Length: 338
Image 1 (tube, rainbow, N blue to C red):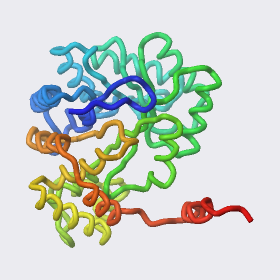
Image 2: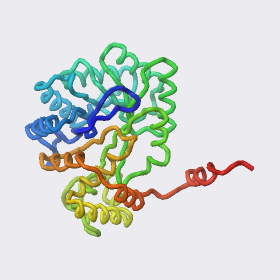
Image 3: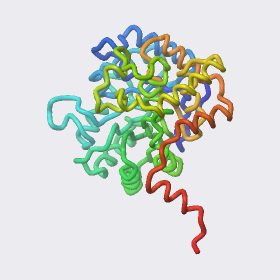
Image 4: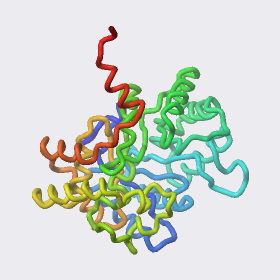
């Protein structure tokens, strides 16, 4: 497996990151502890070194499972990422990005993971109540005290990213080096603004939901709302809800992915993941497999490459609609002022 620099940092991460969101969840769509431990072992055996979790995943049980798996490895050989922001208790300060919650949440995550240091600590989304300067000072304390090595962010608006970066510069803390956002052939909207910002500011993109919640696995059919699988259980407001996926544009993407998969003797998922793998601004891709079989299939996306012709076809069929002001900027930014 290849290793890439995480953004502008010197930290090397495998191009496949193991997502653990459903490890330990209390549902029939989750991965139980024994299977999760097996999958972590297989991922590391395949050369993966980048494990992604969050304190909110399965109310902390995901971190506990990761921590149990890490007992069999030297943590210096791995890169472990987790997150802070969402509700972890019933008290008013059990959520958010206040100094109090960030510090308490980090210590709790370290205890669940059985680590002295978190390699990559994400802000899971913006907190409209806490001044970002307060949050950045809390992150600086965690870095200076050795509790955190690198910081990242996720699900921020672009102006919020820049505000956080500027606040960090003012207090002299380490900059963000990673940005975790939804990105796939069926969700490319961050290309309008975020991608160029990440490249300019030195943030490595870590896509979540690279298969569109399983839609790009090829198991769904036109006009047939599924009764099984992740998408079937998603509420209408969810990013991976069926009504967001079942569009004519997305079915055309599926058709092309299927054509390439058949020609290359690969799975739909491997084609979709390989398209992401070609993006120079993507440091690592989170594969959120539920079963060992799915993990094995996903890992098969990282030992071959799509041709330039195949990439161009996938680019064309999945290209987001141009909207204002981006089409205006594209049209006129190349013209000389008269």
